[in-house]
Length: 439
Image (tube, rainbow, N blue to C red):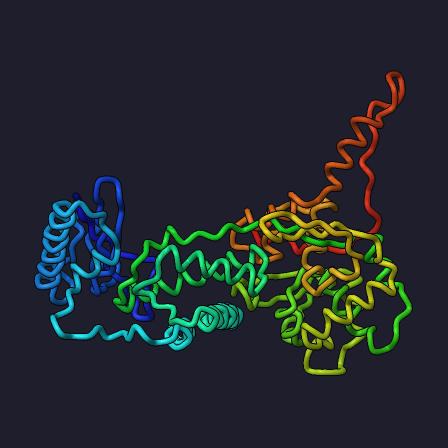
């Protein structure tokens, strides 16, 4: 058995301090627990796993860490003698023993909705994005619904694999969530339990790595150049035209709904005889710069001077409802393969394309059309504001046209003696242009 002390520089607070964690290894099993101590990176000696002399009260703090290591060793010998398996809950109990007759500070009977709201307050204080906080509202409501369905409080101190399986069954059969929605809920649950364990000293009875939910590769709908032309030229009632225009603008720029809804004249800048949008994305807080093509500029000019916002964006749910009607009027009614899971198996059905169009379809369309037209993946990553290029590469995997063009070139090439190759078809028009990156 060995113990280490690690400074978690990835969890720096507003004062620049990072928590010190204890990591214990038991015959290949790795457990970790917060010690309750914090310091700045410059005050920590990573090689010696101790506080530097410049840290106020360094001697006492180092003695405290030595005591913690001794407590872990004493606990491990008791566990080994009893033939038991070390757990995080047991480690925490050894480091924070509760005196006899004293009830732990966290009430076991508290609803997860109450405790989870404390977690959201902490995230809000740390400056998390509004969209992230909204997602945690969804998670909180799901866990509260599970409590009502089960008739018992979801207690972190007694949460085990049996309870976890019941939660998964509830999300899948009662709430009828898709695999990716379940995966997101479990990811939020693990973050919540980790917060309670590491930052609030609440005993968590299960190792978080055992809380598993599998995501699935969901197909992303995107529109072709022909589809975009049909949407741009279809005759529509006056009430639907602004919704169509906002959707097309997103197809030309790759903006999410939250970003296009917040655009104002301050985001518009002149550049090299044209115009660009410069903004900070709501979801990722990443700064992006997007060149406005002729088609995008035309939509901006159409609504210039009418309002404080650049475009007449309505509520997301309203736009999604209207977009289905617009797509139907534009003739986007071909059948597409909709794959879902039910009863442990795949369910496939043919659904009209117009029924699947949403505001976010525009972002998928921009990404796939940009790649088809030759935009480098690295440039597309900057425009979309992705932190990891792996996220952008997802779009490269779903472009079937690349596969089709390759097969056409190989199988339909002229016979020997004729032209050696077949040119790859070039899609008409351009919906995207890129502002060159600064040197």
